Amino acid sequence: MNILKFRVINKIAETKESFSFVLKPLCEVPPEHVPGKYLPIKIRTGKSLLFRSYSLSSAAAANEDFKITVKRENGGRGSNWLCDNVNVGDLVETLPPAGEFYPQNWERDFIFFAGGSGITPVISIIKTALIKYNNRMKLFYANSSKDSVIFREELKELSLAHPERFDIEFWSDDEKGIPTSSAFEQYVDDTSEVEYFLCGPAPFMGGVENFLIESKVPPGLITKESFAGSVSDDNGDKNESKEKNFAVSVLLNGSRTEVMCSEDNFILKEIINAGVNVPNSCGAGNCGSCMCSLLSGDVVLEENTVLDPSDEEDGWILACRSKPKSRFIEISFDE
Ligand SMILES: Cc1cc2nc3c(=O)[nH]c(=O)nc-3n(C[C@H](O)[C@H](O)[C@H](O)COP(=O)(O)OP(=O)(O)OC[C@H]3O[C@@H](n4cnc5c(N)ncnc54)[C@H](O)[C@@H]3O)c2cc1C
Ligand code: FES
Image (cartoon, rainbow, N blue to C red; front, side, top):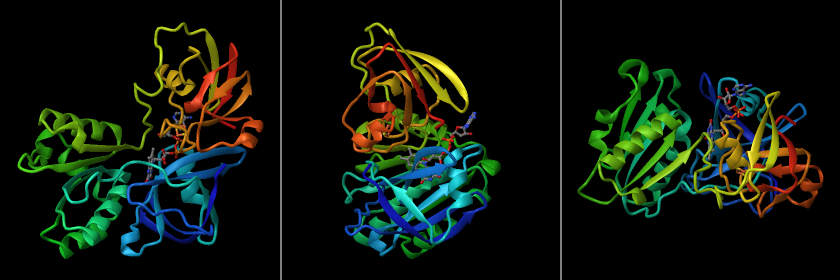
């Protein structure tokens, strides 16, 4: 694996359920610190090995170190482990930064819709734009309550320092209810070409996206980052009509599900279609989220940037880049 090492040089409690970790790269050539990218963090919890993605919440343009911000997920293995166990002085291992959640054109005006921890890549882009460019930006930032707003003071300070260029609306569900179309209306600008950025929980992003499409915003001007896995319908589905005669037994959280697959489709897609919610993110072999161990049977592992031949010898595969080779396959997301 192409693993990078970082030292934790600060740990900041942002809210009662989220922490930021400031990271110093320990490699000779530090990775590029690009706003909107994420670090796939390697997490060892007991016997398990997981990768979980966390967006960079700092900006190199502001001379800031690498920083990720982790919000605890109720019952989540990786986020709680990081918040409880990683401290200043510890080593953190990651895959190289990945992701495509960044502006196509920094000269355009930007409108952001962020929900909860979805603010992390957004604040990095906002800070970068305020320092390096001249565009105007608006942020609609929704949270379940005021207590869970990450970076509230920092965002307010940025807006006060740049009143002509950056506006924020903080939205609390416990005061105003779940935001619907009427909350978003003032954010559609049909007078100029604006780029829209959506990041947060799936229902929030879905609501905003439907509204933008109904408002005739061209899909090419909408950039999205889903924190809940992103394997889409067009991800490697070469032939839906091929017979599904490869049986894959999937172990997740101690329970087993049998999924039938065809030889032309990636296993992850078939597992998700069968309604089994296994970890995944990029769907393209770059983040390690879907890494699992091959307990029996054989797969064809296609090109990826995560695993090298020795990892394969150790029995690791990526479900998003593996197609079935033998009739019976057993994989585990619990190892
Ligand atoms: C590109 C990208 C960027 C991201 N950036 C950030 C970021 O900046 N900050 C951030 O906080 N997050 C971010 N995330 C989300 C993050 O990667 C993790 O998905 C998140 O922290 C949850 O991981 P986990 O291991 O804690 O949860 P998991 O263990 O993967 O659990 C996920 C969900 O499944 C449920 N679950 C777990 N075990 C069981 C069980 N036995 N039965 C039923 N349900 C169960 C959990 O309750 C939880 O809701 C990002 C995700 C992506 C894809
Ligand atoms: S989902 Fe990212 S490597 Fe498989």
